[in-house]
Amino acid sequence: MDEVGDTPPEIVQQNMDTGIIKEKDISFEEVKERAWEMSQETLKQWKNRLDSNVQEKAETINRHLTDLSVLYGESIPEEVVVSLQYYPREGSQKGEPINNFVESGRLPEETADILYWVSNPSILPTYSAEDVEKLYEDASDRAVVSLLHEIQHRNFQKEDFRDLIKTSEQRPEVAQVLEKLQGVKGSHVEVTNELVTTYLETFGKERIEEEQEQVTDLDDKSPISIEVDKEKTGQVLEAVIREDVEEWRNRRKSPGPYTDLGQNWEKVLGGLPEGYGSENNESDVTQKDSDDSYKGTRIYEIARTLSTELAKRYVRERRKMDTDFMVELYKMVDQQFKNTAS
Image 1 (tube, rainbow, N blue to C red):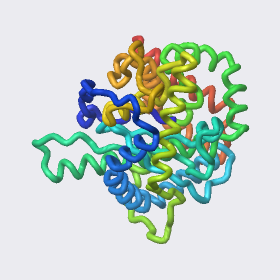
Image 2: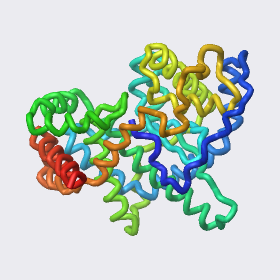
Image 3: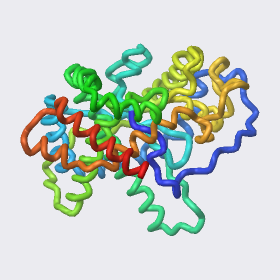
Image 4: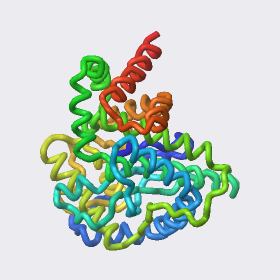
């Protein structure tokens, strides 16, 4: 799962007003209907933008998926269905493969491959039309890169990759660095998995930036398909709220990966169904500094600073990632720690 907070600080909205009279008797059906009324226009606009952006970058996206196929030793997906969802906090974007919701039985697998939450950027009164358009273009570009992250989780990270992580983490040169990283992980972050995924996401981002001036073959089609559907939007929102409370808060594991999303919906809707709203002793994670789960952000930051030459070399040599790859990757992480300490 990609983290929230991938948005530059200049377009992150200030914390929402918390002085809301909460409704005690609001139902899930009312929550879903109000949420759709509030979000449908934004979602439709985002779909148009992403459809266009994904097609413009189709050739580059396909080349990157070919590289990922080499590195993971898995086949390229014929289609990746992305279900757009609304994040009720301006400047926020967040992606996740549907795997966890399918495994928990909260969503059917045919819902989508990837869930992706979007919002509008925060627009200041002083911004010109050109400034606003640039904000949307940048947000759309970040979304495409983030989707490449989630496609790894959904389509490429199979049993072989999970076995590789287990084997590599037993290597002393990996274990020593991993111990340092454990101190900056979030409560729901799988360190090595997110380190590799974000590192290869950066590899893809570099390719997109390097090739953005090239003319794309209009016959080349990306496998990424963007969907906006009222029924699915409601199903996902209910699944997120239930997962946050039933799997995380009620099991005393809160805050979890969906707490910020749920609490922001609670604020803009004026409440959630009884038993699913925030409790008096629960921290307000929409105030980011109080949310322990955001510690994991450091792992993403580290991964995005590493040289992608390792990945490029493996692709050139047509090599699948192995323990040597993991050891080299962790050596670069260790050097980052040493550079920071010096």
